[in-house]
Image (cartoon, rainbow, N blue to C red; front, side, top):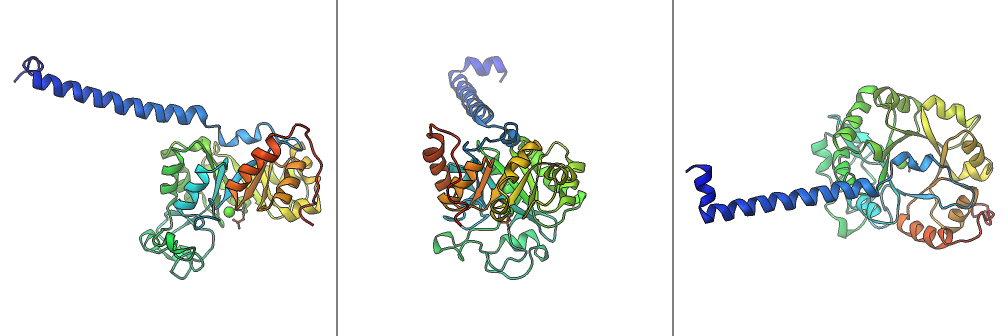
Length: 314
Ligand code: G3P
Ligand code: CA
């Protein structure tokens, strides 16, 4: 039967119209999702193009997802943080024995799974067979250690951004595995790579200079600009202790044209002090709560800036 005969037949005609309608609907939904994501999403480094003034609302980064309500660094915790008022979700990346980037904080699987031993001794198949949820609660029994790829597959459909902390020291070759996953999932503009290791951030710059880096330092010693330049970083992430000891650090880092994040603040007294100092982002285990607190206590505040009241809870 020819095409014209097909179309002349009412049954074929109906089938063809249904197929065309299905294609139109799928295309429209896909376009809506893509456009929606692109319109609402701000670039991950957008937060550092205009640095916060004292009293201005800091952005919220969910530490290991929303680790107060679900087991840290599982897809459950990460998704909850992406769906909360958090602006960013922070997670930790390590490599398995067979070179698969996976999300886990500790060097060993002992604390957060039913297995034992270092992460790097497990193949991905072995690691993903572990139970990463029961330690947190029966409701999460059977949760698995996610691969970075699984998480980026979720992130790509979210309006939020992610901080991917590369744990330990990474070679160019290993960084390329992460960069490739980021590129393949189309999230290059929605991730920041963090590391305690300057050489790892230098590797990121060599492999994918378009990916922004953040240097994590327990303390900022010396010139913040030099420190960040050595790592090619757009921002520094430092501890509550470092800022408590020297609150002028926030201004010094801003004067160098860099962003500054503080980790890990979990109560409203420290949130208040961090905002009063003009910290750009707060890493917290309580992203949903901090998001609500920011909206209520800071965004509605008419008279900014306000002064630190609690000296970080001391
Ligand atoms: O965001 C910084 C923070 O995640 C670093 O500490 O040990 O929780 O990875 P840690
Ligand atoms: Ca981390």
